[in-house]
Image (cartoon, rainbow, N blue to C red; front, side, top):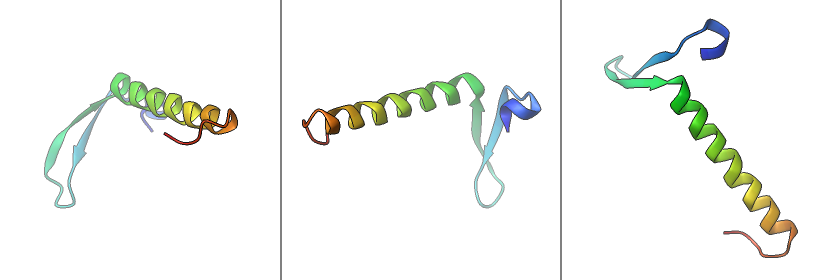
Length: 53
């Protein structure tokens, strides 16, 4: 959604629509990359016979 609409900052709200903070596109991308690297490491360890971390 951030890329489609060109947003750099997106507000985060709770169930009662109270503001919790702001997510920056760069921070969101960084977290996605870290998650991808972790999943890749798990798969590599599994294939190499090391097992799960």
